[in-house]
Length: 426
Image (cartoon, rainbow, N blue to C red; front, side, top):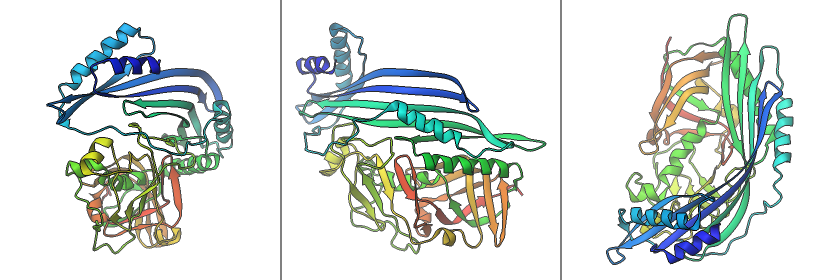
């Protein structure tokens, strides 16, 4: 089907094109407690086409994209492509060229066994240490084998495979008077059995402590420790500021070789792009525009080294040999776990919502469960919120030497921000 679409594109009025054909084999399992309620197999194909049209004697270029269904006839495909070309003529961007073929070492993912990966997840869930008062309410397992082929008008024609998975878990905790639910979603490549068991065991404890949590005190400015997946959003701020699109559109004022926080007295951030990260769901050979993905250092000790992003903005900025970024690593800091967890601080393990604005760096989160450490006393608390800005926090933030992985992000296991505004309800 892809070959047919490429032939039609070559004969059309499009000046350039990109085609992405993804075939996915998926196994799905739905459990109530540990009893299988239902399961199904999915085998689907999605073909996405993007066409480009040169305008004003090649000074500008327009583009439009859409999905071409595998069931369409040749005439229907021609009609859909003509519609895309018409839409592309209404878009005007400064001209840029598409990615060209480049050599790379293909990932070895041809032995992906969906059924075995699914079995690993089922066995992992059976080993969760439940009690009569903290237990699994339900969980759903989704495992996929993805085959992707990318073709463009510049001659790129690459195919690669990768696994992806997702587990959704509902944990219940109860006492004599109340019962609550906590929800978790875990994404990855294959099954990280030990990591999954560790995380869900922590959530069972959080559920137990949530039942006895008191009100969060009015702390004003305080140190806040982030030990869970919410810390990924803190580091997404640095990744966003390193994006070529952000640089070109002036959403980021970062400059190559210029320290982003020259007065910082805490740990400094080193951010890397990785082609492959074990158990990531985003271990691709090329990005969605066909650019070869390579390991790269974006930020070294708070100093930008290069920028990544889509071909259009990289072309405008004159950045070569880069791509979109999918897997990230933030190197560990200088502190041990015990050093991060010292003095007075609030450790937030559960937010009702947590957001970091990618442009301003403003953070905001409603506390569902946290632990207030006041010297030797530790109190579970709930309610209130945290706020502030990464623009200021980067001047004094501390990271553990130890790291923890969340799908495509490998980050410090603990991150401590100083002088966070904590609004309590006490």
